[in-house]
Length: 157
Image (cartoon, rainbow, N blue to C red; front, top):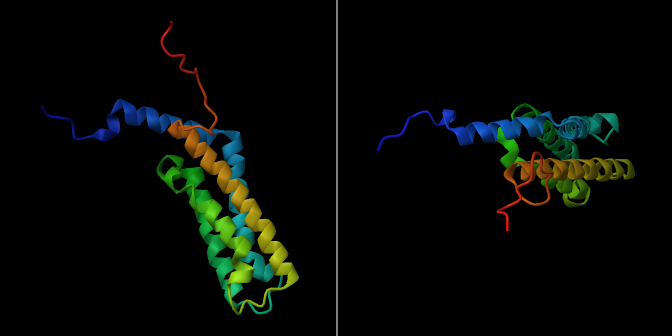
């Protein structure tokens, strides 16, 4: 028994791609991705926006790197959700890290403004990341996600 070498034309793969494209086209998913991108960019620029005491402090470098990672994830989610849905758990972890970073990173000289900024933007990244995870679960057919289409009613009794 021989099989075709091109799995990309398999009906299941094509159906799965269509589901991921539908999830990415969902206005709520697009809003979550856009807000995640903006949150990541703000986090990356926050040392200069808030005027951290020195932009080479460990907290400033952390915010720059973490913010760029969040922004890149958001762009990946919005442009290739079918390929990046498996990484949807990363954004909430980066949100949690952003919240606790001012207390964990030594030598950061965290001020009230930097702590408040990190907590707020970290909470936003966490919540938006959880929303992205929900869309990923929806596409996998797991509970907790929104189901689209006709529900399966099972066999008639």
